[in-house]
Length: 246
Image (tube, rainbow, N blue to C red; front, side, top):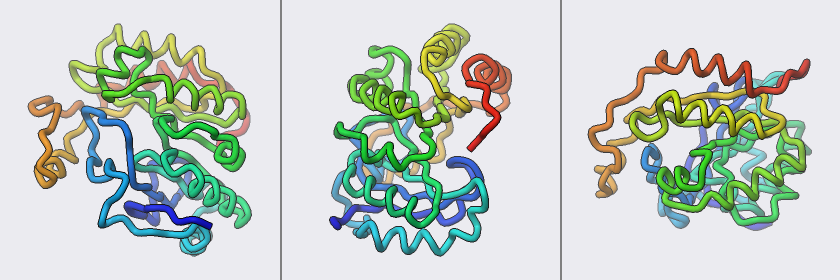
């Protein structure tokens, strides 16, 4: 088995999927989102990242299995986990062999062939940066096409989705924007939950430490309660009704 680069591990996460979860942050991301709070995960090679074989990583994660219960498990995040596809696929398969439920936190911008990854993914936390190519480019600096390709593969594999969308004042906020998001999400199947995430500035200090200008300097954080009505609306209109919830 080859090795992968792991930026960091969180042993008892509560916000990256259902239940209690271990979160694996993989190193590397091709996007440059204007509101990114983890610029230290961008570089593919990072001296602080730790190398793991899939087996060694999953053996470490299995120690926390008693805490996962019926809903919890392991979430692979980043950076962008799809940029280490072979390592990710092997880790997901080993998790399933160990009886651990899996979740993928992704913006869908990886390297192509996703069959082996999706075959062992129980849930996708899908980060929808924007719903138009122009908006996507404005937010991320990249093309929307890789996201579309990943979403098509996920839809074909019928993997359940929790959709996430960061709401930034002056960039991805306002009634017109959120109504457009609603219309777009209605075209996607297997959505179980929508989470509108308020823009925050908790990662700004990392830019200063790395000597990188912060793209949204001066933009104030958004209060979480400002999104309550839209969160309720999108979960009512865009989610499939199901007796089973992951």
